[in-house]
Image (cartoon, rainbow, N blue to C red):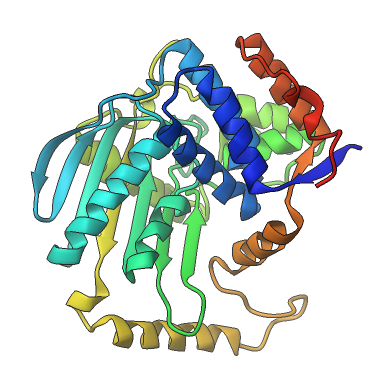
Amino acid sequence: MDRVRVQPDKIREFYLFVLGQLNVPAGEIETVADAAIFASLRGIDSHGFIPTLTRAVKEIRAGIVKPDARIKILKENENGALIDANMSLGPVTGVKAMEIAIEKANKAAVATVVAFNCNHFGTASYYATRALDKDMIGVVFCNASPTVAPFGGREAVHGTNPMSFAIPAGKYNPLVLDISTSVVAGGKIIQALRKGEKIPEGWALDKYGNPTTDPKAALEGVRLPMGGHKGYGLGLVVDVFTAALAGSLIGKEIPPYWDLTTPYGASYFMMVINPESFAGVEKFKQKVDRLIQDCKSCAPMEGFKEVMVPGEVELTEEQKRKKEGIPVNKNQWDEMVETLRSNGIKLDSWENTLFEEKY
């Protein structure tokens, strides 16, 4: 078999087995696994359970990520907080920051938490959607190491700098927007390289500043901003809302993502807005529903079956994968196994388990 489908519980079990060998507390492992499974279920495989686990093991072994690190609240008031993540696991910091913001927004209408000394946290929507359980709006930004050229430039100045917005609705599913401010996230270029595929024109430049469809040349060069000057501007705004507010590493100050000799040092911005403090939750949901209805009833143009809204594609994939399981490619699994073994992880029967059992 070259491909199997795996249920989330099996992935959680594997995470506990692997990260437990690195003395990561069980609660933190559960959080990291949950964030990775969220991405895998929604079809965001570039941030799914295999790349997340591989990266976590390498970072912990290199000493640039600290399991069980003490996350410190440096400043705090009724509307916000500033957090020093102390290089803890990204999802652990992200969940804590969002929980603080939700708690404060429940009383203060709007709350913002900024965190620095952070690591990669996976998909931004994992944190933004946590506000939906409280009928609140979640907003999440994260800056990243420079891989994106400014509009009109050919050298990397800032990162893919993702942003996510999660908006509750009434009879419809929530609106969930999760995008990088570059044309594409780096993980998708890596996936193309592994599959031996070319990337579309307009994604990246090679190291000489020339447009390229070669994923290897793209990874050695720079990515382009989404929508030209518009994505460029949004990418800069993300750096300001994260690193500038935190007084932390910004733009070219952030070390390369793959450099395991120094801490990463990203920053997060998390905002929660409570509609009850404005028009009220029910009125708010009615208006969001009306907007979604207008979109869904719009006549599709040629080549499209229907008009979809943000988060709809991912939700459809999530429902499918919850039923059928998360697809795992054997080549990618074998590559991860080799990385884990080279970092001292004992896999025992896990090495071939997924491809010997039926799920």
